Image (cartoon, rainbow, N blue to C red; front, side):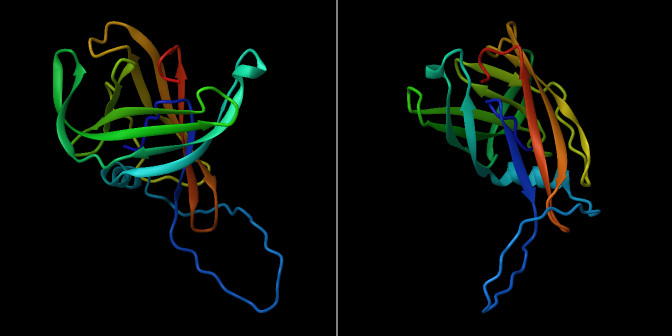
Length: 211
């Protein structure tokens, strides 16, 4: 469920309802505040819905190199289609399971790097019954497998943190050449009295292809 990004990134997902507003004939200054909420939020159900229906987010990005010419900033978009294409996925070279696939497209636009625009397409796989995350494949680049699917809490409250799971990364489907480990975790921070922000964090180490 939710997302295992194919780049090192932090993506915030807002679980919220509709907030009402009011108007006044007298101009007034406005302020933004955050409020800790005691409400419980349906983490697992939101993740299932997001995987089933697809999602899209804009984000900012930065790249730091050894010189100013290799350091730059920019913005990007990640779009994941609904997971509704029946297929199979090899958890191991000898264990192939039924799955649903979705297409993830990440586009980056840099302000002072060459090339100015880059794009990458990844196929993601999920359990057809539970939408639990199986893995992701970018042909010629990486083959990521969650041998034990990440486990999302049924509900969370503001202040919660935890580890969702570990994703093994390989160079291809033979799973003979390891290419890093991705540890997925989450934090829940205050937003308003009735909403919270859940941040999914992918910490990728030891990889040359998932960046």
